[in-house]
Image (cartoon, rainbow, N blue to C red; front, side):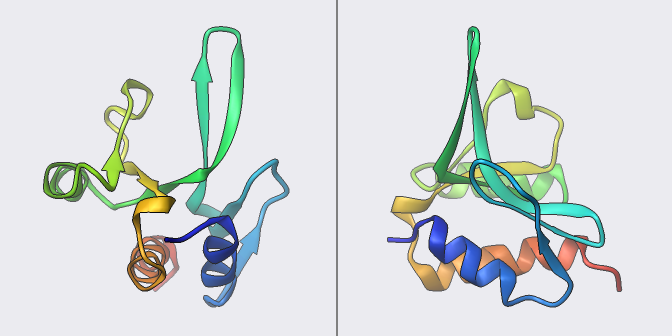
Length: 112
């Protein structure tokens, strides 16, 4: 089981990462976001969910593969339709897998 502290530790261990001031966590490389806390929206309110990470996944094919392959771990909402992003339930993932996912997201956003 992973949590926001694990996300922070793993993201900050990667080269060139900066943490953006937020109510949860928000990490960027070369000015591009690769993992941040999920801003859940409902009528008239916005709640920052630090138990859910939003991950950059590169493209729609990868997004669909994750959503269909592991629906207990990954999900999306209508607000993310058309974006190469998935939400990850941190309580359902172990730290090793989280590290792989965060590193993959970072690789896709880091300059080559």
